[in-house]
Length: 287
Image: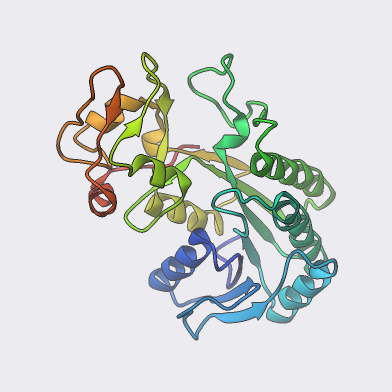
């Protein structure tokens, strides 16, 4: 399949959804963008054809299928996921797991040619027997106590079975690691933006990040290039936590971090500098 003429994006209220819309509009005007979400995002470009859809509704699959067929959608990018877990476990499951199943059913009914799903490297799980470098073939062993990770694992399991039943649809899963950038904000970036970032004494874990622009670029690329599963990280490598903070390319500060005596900590210079400095960090995707 070549570059699609009509692209539908679910989850316009998410960071990835609205950022992908802006990027697609900047790159080309040769295709139409269809947006699906429960509420129309503020300042959504009028050129984007918006359809109100609640993926937690029992009949959401038929509603989405109608939109996809009516708009003659060729590719669907599914980004309707929480950027961070909430206390409402049941609603998170309805949106992420059941909502994704609705999207799959709708794509099958509308005979969509390509489906791209945003996932996460958190699905590999934080286990001591993990190798330093995980391939896409590594088993998904996400932490069982994290309901948001469990939801994503269920989505990928359902998607793998769905793909076998619908071989005419090209399926791409993009597993991104932690996202950093001048406009991205979630529980991870909030943690690292603290005046003092606590760290376990004597433990310097390997960490991975991806720049927000690279993550959105990967989603755009996946709409026209078929790749089954791709894990994305900063430069395709892992780096120790302290080295990340001390690196000249650090997303937090131009100066070396300070450490308190007795309790190792790192000291970013605050939220504004994080957002400004991280925009100069060189990142890439790895597959």
